[in-house]
Image (tube, rainbow, N blue to C red; front, side, top):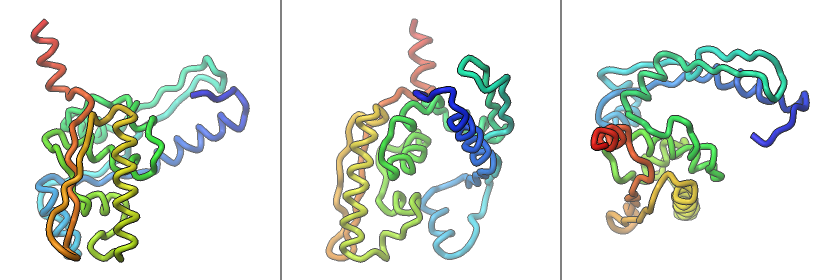
Length: 196
């Protein structure tokens, strides 16, 4: 990680793991558009869902550079990753991203196996913003941030390329970002190994 054995660096890592252990993720299964509509209406989505901690346990044998750190994911996290058939479980792309927006968008894009586009309204929700309520200046800034985030994902190897589609007219114009994933999905890897 490019850090030394200095006590402050070790403490920072410990505090980071403590914060991650406190994170609880709630996931709802079903059509993403319908789920968002339910949330917009102030209702909980009907149907299946689950919540759980990302990390279950973190242990270490010492605080030296050659000591072993063991991270155990929560059962629910592992199940969710397996269902999504993610390949980038090592998070190389996530850690390579420099844009905060890209860091927020990437897990969603990477987890949507069958999608090849994402609407700016969805990207807004991922960052706690309602695009439809933004001023023209706020929308322009948000769209610039989205384009920079997608470029960042290309640079990090998560996406091969992307393009922007303008939808609607006048004040109701929105953007849809089409993309090509840069990483083979688990199913593709299984097929590739079966051919050998």
